[in-house]
Length: 483
Ligand code: NDP
Image 1 (cartoon, helix red, strand yellow):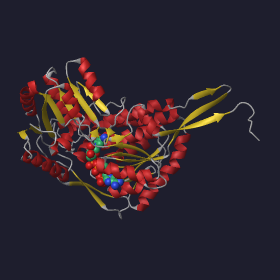
Image 2: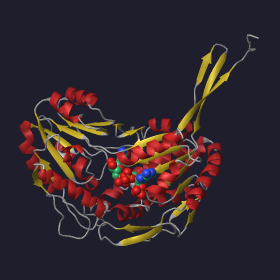
Image 3: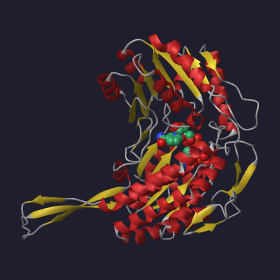
Image 4: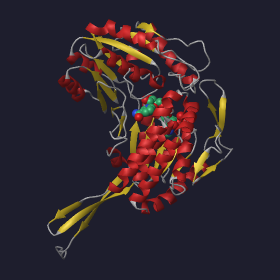
């Protein structure tokens, strides 16, 4: 399979290169070897992409919504048909095991394209009667949207931002993380092949500076970021200067509360999915696991037994179910947190080390006896590190669960139906789970409260963030004036 793309950027319907841009080396996290070399966008490339998007957006917005939707649905079909190759590429890009990428990345991107393709034609305004007079509203595109992505779900993020943007009649310039620049190029190629006019969806590469230059450009109408809170602060502030519309999908430190009446096996599954999927590099992970005192020992015992089922190795091997971290740098950061956890007095139940094998691996790590003020309890780690806390009562669990600057997600495992709903109502988080964790179907809104973000992706809610309402007042009779 060809890993090196034809060129670094995809602009106006074709691959474009400018070797004057800073070199970006793509490293396969399993071997540590360079598998592709790209170049960051120069100001000329940024300008080319924005000009193409501005021009194409006008044409695209003039199409009927049914035609636009058809393009998106065709792109979804192409993605599904190429799922294997796209999954292999996503695995090279991120190091996530093929066992995951083959069911969670191009497939999730295709879901978004299909869903918003289907929705496009029903994006309409409303009619507001005022006696004989009336007002009607038009739901119009914003114009040129900039998408900036994190490195954990490059294909999914490119589609979660692109699909609603395009359905509403916008054009997009997408900048992937420089750590994982490959997959988004394929999304651009596929959209073009599906019939999107050249320039409607462009991908340019770059480090943070390229993203920063896009945000303040007068040709840009909206910025959608998936990234960390510190980057979110900078991007939000820069967008504010031009009063630009934003979507901010940022980090989290989400709680997962397990009551003693919960089905233990399901609760352990939830904790595993919410901490170790994608080697823990998931924004909504439930990394603060509150376990009611009566079942703490049983929970830790079963969790440790189940973690013996982890199979590390070449992530392209379909039997491997746990991949390396995305980069050496990210592994170093996570190791720093593990050292802090030990130094601050948490009990290391299992993991914590690099296994003796190639790749940026870190064992799935579980800490118990974690107190709320420890660093590992407060900071987003973004790696395979679970912290287990004890609690006694529902009130206590809810109060401690909400004691965080973040508000992305929260989960509860209990057999008591009313308690499950009470907890969900009480959680200060944008996405809550009862007896499950980390589902992200395109039909449901996804996003955070507090520092975890602004706006929602997926579902009909995303339309609000990629369109604007225009009100048109119509008078049927004569108009009077005082003089
Ligand atoms: P970063 O915040 O480091 O980077 C996100 C993106 O922003 C990258 O493309 C980055 O480019 C770019 N960027 C960095 N600085 C600037 C700037 N000043 N202006 C414009 N763009 C900039 O996040 P990571 O890539 O490390 O991803 C991990 C983070 O993303 C975690 O906090 C995680 O929780 C969050 N995340 C949130 C999700 C959600 O939906 N809420 C989903 C997935 C991840 P470059 O990489 O080149 O520096």
